[in-house]
Length: 327
Ligand SMILES: Cc1cc2nc3c(=O)[nH]c(=O)nc-3n(C[C@H](O)[C@H](O)[C@H](O)COP(=O)(O)OP(=O)(O)OC[C@H]3O[C@@H](n4cnc5c(N)ncnc54)[C@H](O)[C@@H]3O)c2cc1C
Image (cartoon, rainbow, N blue to C red; front, top):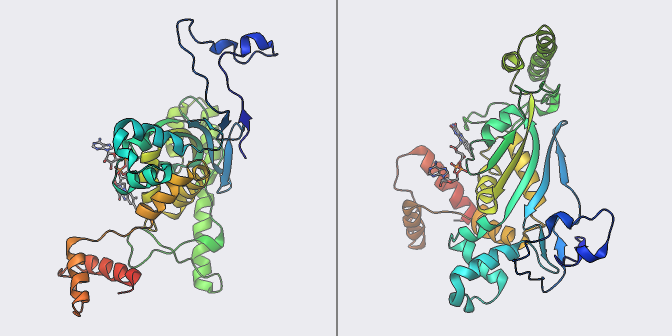
């Protein structure tokens, strides 16, 4: 249960507490002060961060949230409702319950109220994960600088039992791992692990060259993408949900999926109503194309439900959806 903060802007001047935490935050004398109707609670329960460790040297830490304080008994979903009621006003009389309103907004892609909630993360990840992550352009990012500082001696490694094979059907990746019980496959997995060790070994050279006066900005260019970096990453909830949808997907690389899952797990308790609605209407939903709707209609008329397309990939996608729908 989050820690309770009895929040009042007017109290501290007379409280004489040591240290005086509020003294720097006295409002201007001409501001009108409104106290909250109920005590406010910190959505992080008074913690400075919630951290989920990943991949030996990695982590996702939730370091801040907007709103950070919410009325006792509520969640940060409340900020979505607050924003929506400004614009939907009288219309929301029909949807007079907060959960229903949030579900309506998500179902109908009314996105801006979800931009009123923001989360800030401190993340440590390999550079190859960061390269995928940075493509999500709506976030605010500040990354560790290899020009100002020496890159840390931290590298992504995989165990012998986790070396993935290239999938013959999915050109972007693979799920199946090399079989340690098969001598030929074990040898390949060992070679891959040795290859990662080899590039990690370049770090010693990097240090030596910096010692000899090579600039940090140049010395780092020989380091591999398994090297860890860090950043602060702040984004609104609407775009975090977009990020999660893409990066939790089975088509995304396993390593970034691990990070997306950690991010999901950190925010889920803070905006539980939104996350539930998002799972129902987006993450676990199924989108049908016009051709697929025609195929469904064909099945309902007793036909075979063939997709009117000669594109093999599109047909395979329809087969997968059809299976999911039990048709
Ligand atoms: C499984 C997977 C494989 C991928 N493979 C590749 C690859 O091989 N090569 C590659 O280059 N990329 C690849 N990507 C990256 C992908 O193409 C997108 O760049 C990335 O997912 C970010 O998506 P986005 O643009 O929707 O996200 P964001 O940048 O977060 O943008 C969110 C939304 O905001 C809007 N928006 C943001 N910026 C602008 C803008 N400047 N103008 C107009 N609208 C904007 C758009 O509506 C956008 O959808 C891959 C992504 C995934 C998930």
